[in-house]
Image (cartoon, rainbow, N blue to C red; front, side, top):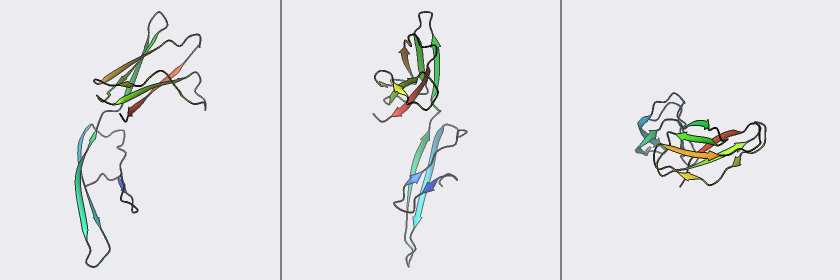
Length: 130
């Protein structure tokens, strides 16, 4: 069975499910069955597994020399992650800082030297397609 909040588009049959934040990590076996309104009615079904992973978390630390380390946690090996920043939390766009990194394990560290700005806000985007 599909999760209660999953949706299948009537035009094209696109399956969409965004797991809730309290969804525990793990494999979810989902079976979709579609039926037409013909006589006789015809149907098809497909079973697949959706793996829910822990949410991405970010840790930030600063050393005495002004360098900032931004660490993405719960990353997926082989997937890309991007560090972004802005100096004010307003409507301005986030700026990409440096090249994307490909995770080799469950964390990805980034470093930044923010310079003379009194504050800087960071986020990590990912996982991104390889």
